[in-house]
Length: 354
Ligand code: PBG
Image (tube, rainbow, N blue to C red; front, side, top):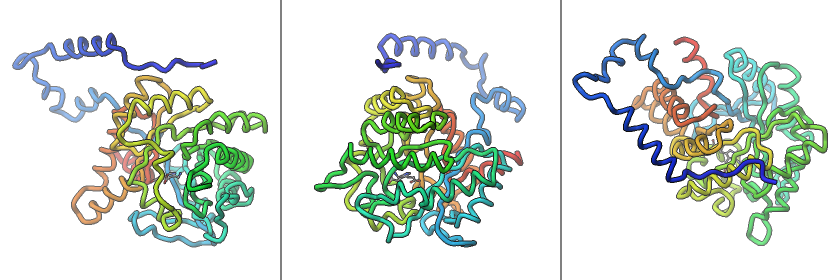
């Protein structure tokens, strides 16, 4: 039985919206001067409709093998891949800044990558060791992990490729095994980013059956086949491996009604939180998702968005602190309850010093 009904904006709702907008514009110049409320800082703060806080941030972090090593990700200025020991220290600092959660992404040794991506469910893989290390030493911060095969797959795809096609149900079986080993290592939130059909329900059932009923699921519900993920693929070392593109499973950027179907399915299947990805170009989708379902809604300011802003800022063309906070504020205004951003640590420091 469906638990929720998927609601699409009816013409009645559209009409009501238009009426309420008419009332909000009843004032007329010169009796009404909208600049009055904007004149002083205290007044601007008083009338602010949304507010970004450190509680809205999730910090994605790249991990690599080794000890006391960091490697700069060339296409993401300011972002390093960290060995587990340095990663744990970085997570402590993030926790001390008040960041509620981090998301772990591994760079897998190319030798461990296979067409069936079995390294994904090796309980001793890099992600599981990173989860374990952080959970053992750092309290008070949530750990989110992707559920997708691309870091482990010699084809660079999120699912298993057979006969030139990313197989759905066979991939879901592997994803379920991956979610279980991650949960067993202590991961708090499973974040399936693979876009296979039916994976949320399958993962939820398997987690519950194994006694992980408290493990949360943040579903990458509306994830688009975007050109803005390239720097991320450099960071996890999957760019070279990827054959073709991900258009047969990730969504067409032209669509937004379809995003509501994706989100509706994932909520029915047991997602606790839903995500739209990428971020800035898809804030219209965020708004529709939030208005339609009213569930905890997140967006991912992805690698390409980060690199655009940071790259321009490093050349002196943009002010990094200002564009970072303005973009994150835009996510809040669009209806996000939180944002995954590589700028989380910088944003947390800026918000603290304000
Ligand atoms: C993998 C995954 C991707 C991202 C998060 N998880 C890349 C992809 O789907 O190719 C992108 C994150 C980013 O670009 O910052 N399933």
